[in-house]
Length: 197
Image 1 (tube, rainbow, N blue to C red):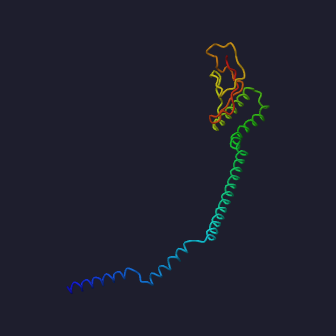
Image 2: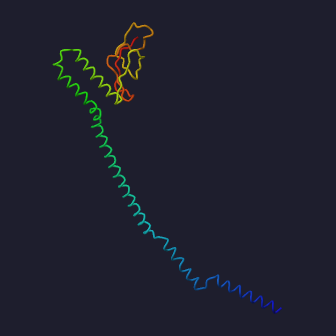
Image 3: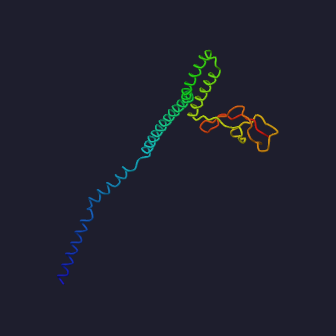
Protein backbone atom coordinates (compact mmCIF):
# COMPACT_ATOMS: atom_id res chain seq x y z
CA UNK A 1 0.00 0.00 0.00
CA UNK A 2 2.82 2.32 0.84
CA UNK A 3 4.43 1.49 -2.48
CA UNK A 4 1.25 2.51 -4.31
CA UNK A 5 1.10 5.82 -2.45
CA UNK A 6 4.73 6.54 -3.23
CA UNK A 7 4.21 5.69 -6.88
CA UNK A 8 1.23 8.03 -7.03
CA UNK A 9 3.29 10.81 -5.41
CA UNK A 10 6.12 10.27 -7.93
CA UNK A 11 3.65 10.32 -10.84
CA UNK A 12 2.01 13.45 -9.51
CA UNK A 13 5.42 15.10 -9.11
CA UNK A 14 6.36 14.24 -12.75
CA UNK A 15 3.04 15.57 -14.05
CA UNK A 16 3.53 18.81 -12.10
CA UNK A 17 7.05 19.22 -13.53
CA UNK A 18 5.71 18.73 -17.04
CA UNK A 19 3.02 21.32 -16.45
CA UNK A 20 5.64 23.76 -15.22
CA UNK A 21 7.70 23.22 -18.34
CA UNK A 22 4.73 23.72 -20.66
CA UNK A 23 3.18 26.74 -19.02
CA UNK A 24 5.18 29.93 -18.78
CA UNK A 25 5.90 31.28 -15.38
CA UNK A 26 4.10 34.32 -14.05
CA UNK A 27 6.88 36.64 -15.25
CA UNK A 28 6.86 35.09 -18.69
CA UNK A 29 3.07 35.42 -18.88
CA UNK A 30 3.36 39.09 -17.99
CA UNK A 31 6.00 39.60 -20.71
CA UNK A 32 3.80 37.87 -23.31
CA UNK A 33 0.83 39.95 -22.21
CA UNK A 34 2.91 43.14 -22.51
CA UNK A 35 4.21 42.26 -25.97
CA UNK A 36 0.82 41.45 -27.50
CA UNK A 37 -0.69 44.96 -27.24
CA UNK A 38 2.55 46.51 -28.51
CA UNK A 39 2.53 44.32 -31.60
CA UNK A 40 -1.11 45.13 -32.33
CA UNK A 41 -0.39 48.82 -31.83
CA UNK A 42 2.42 48.61 -34.36
CA UNK A 43 0.13 46.84 -36.84
CA UNK A 44 -2.75 49.28 -36.35
CA UNK A 45 -2.26 52.81 -37.70
CA UNK A 46 -3.78 55.95 -36.41
CA UNK A 47 -6.39 57.58 -38.68
CA UNK A 48 -3.95 60.41 -39.44
CA UNK A 49 -1.32 57.91 -40.59
CA UNK A 50 -3.88 56.09 -42.76
CA UNK A 51 -4.99 59.39 -44.32
CA UNK A 52 -1.39 60.40 -44.97
CA UNK A 53 -0.64 57.04 -46.60
CA UNK A 54 -3.79 57.20 -48.76
CA UNK A 55 -2.98 60.76 -49.82
CA UNK A 56 0.49 59.60 -50.80
CA UNK A 57 -1.04 56.80 -52.90
CA UNK A 58 -3.45 59.25 -54.54
CA UNK A 59 -0.59 61.60 -55.42
CA UNK A 60 1.37 58.72 -56.91
CA UNK A 61 -1.65 57.64 -59.00
CA UNK A 62 -2.17 61.23 -60.17
CA UNK A 63 1.46 61.44 -61.19
CA UNK A 64 1.22 58.16 -63.11
CA UNK A 65 -1.97 59.31 -64.84
CA UNK A 66 -0.40 62.60 -65.90
CA UNK A 67 2.60 60.70 -67.25
CA UNK A 68 0.33 58.35 -69.25
CA UNK A 69 -1.76 61.25 -70.60
CA UNK A 70 1.38 63.10 -71.70
CA UNK A 71 2.79 59.93 -73.27
CA UNK A 72 -0.46 59.30 -75.19
CA UNK A 73 -0.61 62.93 -76.32
CA UNK A 74 2.94 62.68 -77.69
CA UNK A 75 2.03 59.40 -79.44
CA UNK A 76 -1.09 60.99 -80.99
CA UNK A 77 0.91 64.00 -82.25
CA UNK A 78 3.58 61.71 -83.71
CA UNK A 79 0.96 59.58 -85.53
CA UNK A 80 -0.76 62.70 -86.90
CA UNK A 81 2.58 64.04 -88.16
CA UNK A 82 3.41 60.71 -89.81
CA UNK A 83 -0.05 60.62 -91.41
CA UNK A 84 0.36 64.18 -92.71
CA UNK A 85 3.77 63.24 -94.15
CA UNK A 86 2.25 60.18 -95.86
CA UNK A 87 -0.53 62.27 -97.39
CA UNK A 88 1.93 64.94 -98.50
CA UNK A 89 4.50 62.54 -99.94
CA UNK A 90 2.24 59.55 -100.72
CA UNK A 91 2.44 60.13 -104.48
CA UNK A 92 6.24 59.99 -104.52
CA UNK A 93 6.35 56.34 -105.60
CA UNK A 94 3.86 56.82 -108.44
CA UNK A 95 5.54 60.02 -109.66
CA UNK A 96 8.93 58.28 -109.60
CA UNK A 97 7.37 55.50 -111.69
CA UNK A 98 6.06 58.08 -114.19
CA UNK A 99 9.39 59.90 -114.66
CA UNK A 100 10.61 57.57 -117.47
CA UNK A 101 7.34 58.19 -119.34
CA UNK A 102 7.79 61.96 -118.96
CA UNK A 103 11.34 61.58 -120.33
CA UNK A 104 10.02 59.63 -123.34
CA UNK A 105 7.31 62.23 -124.03
CA UNK A 106 9.86 65.08 -123.89
CA UNK A 107 12.15 63.25 -126.33
CA UNK A 108 9.22 62.64 -128.66
CA UNK A 109 8.26 66.31 -128.47
CA UNK A 110 11.83 67.44 -129.25
CA UNK A 111 12.09 65.12 -132.26
CA UNK A 112 8.56 65.60 -133.58
CA UNK A 113 9.55 68.42 -135.96
CA UNK A 114 12.40 66.32 -137.42
CA UNK A 115 10.08 63.48 -138.47
CA UNK A 116 8.08 63.93 -141.63
CA UNK A 117 6.73 60.40 -141.45
CA UNK A 118 3.52 60.49 -139.38
CA UNK A 119 3.55 56.71 -139.05
CA UNK A 120 6.87 56.85 -137.15
CA UNK A 121 5.51 59.48 -134.75
CA UNK A 122 2.36 57.42 -134.24
CA UNK A 123 4.41 54.29 -133.56
CA UNK A 124 6.58 56.13 -131.01
CA UNK A 125 3.51 57.50 -129.25
CA UNK A 126 1.93 54.04 -129.11
CA UNK A 127 5.12 52.64 -127.57
CA UNK A 128 5.09 55.34 -124.89
CA UNK A 129 1.41 54.66 -124.07
CA UNK A 130 2.09 50.92 -123.89
CA UNK A 131 5.04 51.51 -121.57
CA UNK A 132 2.89 53.79 -119.43
CA UNK A 133 0.17 51.16 -118.98
CA UNK A 134 2.76 48.48 -118.13
CA UNK A 135 4.20 50.68 -115.41
CA UNK A 136 0.73 51.48 -114.08
CA UNK A 137 -0.20 47.78 -114.11
CA UNK A 138 2.81 47.14 -111.85
CA UNK A 139 1.29 49.65 -109.41
CA UNK A 140 -2.06 47.80 -109.54
CA UNK A 141 -3.90 50.02 -112.06
CA UNK A 142 -6.20 48.25 -114.53
CA UNK A 143 -8.36 49.63 -117.29
CA UNK A 144 -11.90 48.25 -117.35
CA UNK A 145 -13.01 46.31 -120.41
CA UNK A 146 -16.69 47.27 -120.55
CA UNK A 147 -18.06 47.14 -124.13
CA UNK A 148 -20.41 44.17 -124.53
CA UNK A 149 -20.54 43.54 -120.79
CA UNK A 150 -23.80 43.68 -118.80
CA UNK A 151 -24.33 47.06 -117.14
CA UNK A 152 -23.08 47.03 -113.54
CA UNK A 153 -23.80 50.08 -111.39
CA UNK A 154 -20.81 49.19 -109.19
CA UNK A 155 -18.46 49.64 -112.17
CA UNK A 156 -20.28 51.76 -114.74
CA UNK A 157 -21.97 55.13 -114.94
CA UNK A 158 -24.67 55.24 -117.62
CA UNK A 159 -24.64 58.61 -119.39
CA UNK A 160 -26.67 57.57 -122.45
CA UNK A 161 -29.26 55.01 -123.44
CA UNK A 162 -29.27 53.48 -126.93
CA UNK A 163 -32.84 52.60 -128.03
CA UNK A 164 -33.98 50.03 -130.62
CA UNK A 165 -31.42 47.32 -129.83
CA UNK A 166 -32.09 43.57 -130.15
CA UNK A 167 -33.29 41.75 -127.03
CA UNK A 168 -29.94 39.99 -126.48
CA UNK A 169 -28.18 43.40 -126.30
CA UNK A 170 -30.58 45.01 -123.84
CA UNK A 171 -28.93 45.99 -120.56
CA UNK A 172 -25.45 45.65 -122.06
CA UNK A 173 -22.82 48.35 -122.57
CA UNK A 174 -22.80 49.47 -126.20
CA UNK A 175 -20.08 52.13 -126.07
CA UNK A 176 -17.57 53.58 -123.60
CA UNK A 177 -17.21 57.36 -123.58
CA UNK A 178 -14.62 57.49 -120.79
CA UNK A 179 -12.58 54.52 -119.58
CA UNK A 180 -12.97 53.31 -116.01
CA UNK A 181 -10.07 52.20 -113.84
CA UNK A 182 -9.48 50.02 -110.79
CA UNK A 183 -6.52 50.27 -108.45
CA UNK A 184 -5.80 47.01 -106.64
CA UNK A 185 -9.37 45.86 -107.48
CA UNK A 186 -10.94 49.02 -106.07
CA UNK A 187 -12.81 51.29 -108.47
CA UNK A 188 -11.09 54.68 -108.67
CA UNK A 189 -13.05 55.90 -111.69
CA UNK A 190 -16.35 54.60 -113.03
CA UNK A 191 -16.56 53.91 -116.76
CA UNK A 192 -18.94 56.34 -118.48
CA UNK A 193 -20.96 54.22 -120.86
CA UNK A 194 -23.93 54.05 -123.23
CA UNK A 195 -26.32 51.20 -122.44
CA UNK A 196 -28.72 49.43 -124.79
CA UNK A 197 -32.41 49.64 -123.90
